[in-house]
Every structure is written in structure tokens, then in C-alpha cells.
Amino acid sequence: MSLCYLIVRSVLQLAVLRFQSDTFKELEIVVLHHELAVLRRRVGRPPLTAVDRVFLAAASRLVPRNRWRSFMVTPATLLRWHRRLVAWRWRYQGRAGRPPLGRDIRELILRFARENPRWGYQRLVGELKGLGIVVSATTVRQVLREGKLGPAGKRGGPTWREFLRAQARSMIAVDFFTVETVWLRRFYVLFFIELGSRRVHFAGCTANPNSLWVTQQARQVTWMLPERADAVRFLIRDRDSKFTNGFDAVFRSEGIRIVRAPIRAPQANAVAERFVRTIRSECLDWLLILNRRHLERVCRVFINHYNGHRPHRALDLTSPSPTRVQLQRSTDSRGACVQRRDLLGGLLHEYNVAA
Image (tube, rainbow, N blue to C red; front, side, top):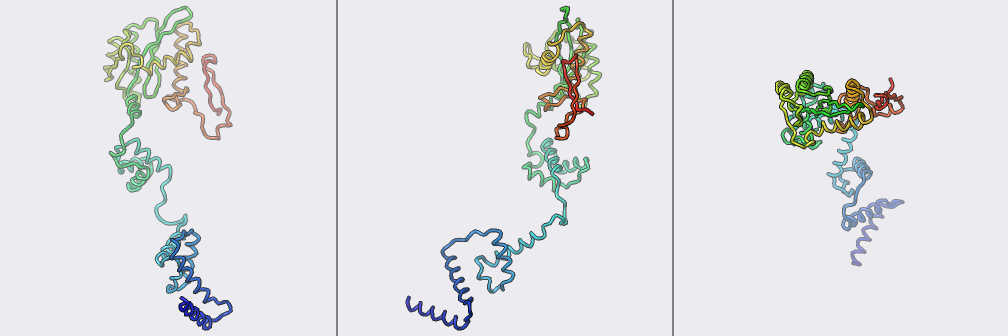
């Protein structure tokens, strides 16, 4: 070992004499190279930051290729870093190519796909084109993949909630409820309610709901059914004797099937029963009814309020057929003037934004 040390020392002395300078730069470089080789044998691959990669890649463009062995990474790595930096240089906002798809269009594509699991890529493209939005089938496929939605037939069918709501659009229910006047006279109120939209139709009230009167009210209701967007297929009613054969015949002539609720099963007609509770607790229990004319006016006012203003939980806190300007949920309407409208002598209140 002593002999080897003396030989190495002699070689270094010759190098110093041959390349002697004031700062011994060449000897220092040799020492640094040797220390780097030692570190490579003892230490694993050190972590490199983005600044390290930029510095080494930039330095490699100035050092000759035959001296790249001084770097701690391979030449292929240096070239890859350089190519990545050059590619990043050309990533600017004004680059040419297909413009990115807007977020609102992406959400619309995903909405169409979820609501229509049997629609393929071309059908989705056609529906969007009908709305004035031009996209390609490849773009639609890519958006569905990013949203974790498969092609047609593999997105899953509707949920039970969606299925029941779709069936409810073709159903209406009918029922009676009674009201006692101040003079202890009993009146029967007949109403219809659409299960899908919760819209109530006031048929009338009478003290004697005989077969002729009930049949006439059924005819008047069937006259307005063709105005609905969804055709009515089923009519739900209980087994009350006031619903005569003539009443059922009117609806059967329109292709509507009569569904009679089981005996002592009010939950089978729960939507109609819930409306009866609502009109009693919010209106009729707080008023003294004088006569039939007074009862008709009260029912019409409340039903108009029920259809056009009152929020419903089943409708995401909206009304069945709003006839007022809804309060905007943005911050711009928080400071707006809100006006109150009183109904039935102040029993009901409706709030609207002042024009």
C-alpha cells in the first residue's frame, strides 16, 4: 500500500508540475471527480429537484459530449430533460389546435348520458347539435370516460326513485273531503291531484254528491287532460260509493284505467290524503265557513296558492306551476325590496321581489 501511495503521489506531482497554475484547478477537478466516483459507489440515486434538472440540462448544452461522463446522470437522461424543457417552452395560451371543451358543455354531455343510458355517442352528438353545440363522437367518448360512464347499455338503468317518478307523471288521484259550516251544514269537496307535478284541480263542492253531479265533474276534468304534456293512464281512487259507475265510465272512455285502493288503506292514495291534511292545517281549520259560495272561494284561493307559490319538498322546494317571479339565489337579490301579498284576510302570505 505504501508503494502504491508513493506512485500515485508521484504521478500527481508530475501533473502539478506539468499543469502548474496559481489555483491548482486541474488538480482540484481530478479530486472532485474521484470523490464523485466514491459517492456513486456508496450512496444510492440522490433525489433531484426541478431546479437541479434545469441546471444540469442547461450545463450539458455547454459542455462537450465527450466530457458528459462528469455528470451524475446518463446522457440519455440529460437529452430527455432538454426535450421536456423545449416542449414546455411552446406551451402557451395562443397555441394552434382544437380549442378546449367548456365546462358547461362537459356537464351537459354527462347529464344527457346519465338521464338517457341507452343513448350512444352519435345520438348524444345529434342532441347537442340540435341545441347548437357541435362536438365530435370522439370528444363525447372521451368526456364519458373521464366521467367514468361507459357506452350505451353499460351505464346502468334508472334508479327506483327515477322509475317511480316517471310512472307518477301518468297518474292522477281523486278524493273527497268534508267541511262543516258555521250552521253545521256539511259540504263535500271533490278535487284531483297529479302525482307527478302535485298540481291540484278543484272540481267543486256540494251538499249532495249524487251520481249526476259526480259524473259532470268528471267530464269537466277530462276536458283539460289533453292539455297536459304527459298522457294520463291511471286514476287512483278509494272505494267510496260516491264514485259511481258513470264516473268511472267517463275516464274509461278516455283510455284511463281506474285503480281502486284497498279497503282501509289510506296510504294507497297517500298524495291525495296529504293534500287534505295540508288544506285543513293551513287554511280550513283557521276559518269559519258560512256557505257553499264562501267555501268555493276559499278552496280556489288556497289551491291557486298551492299550485303557484307554495314550495313542495317532493319538487325540490318549488311550486307545481309557478306564476310568480322566483327569488333569485344570487347575491344581487339579497338587498332587493321584498313585497308581501296577503290572501284570505292575511291567513296566507306570498312574498315577491319588487319590480
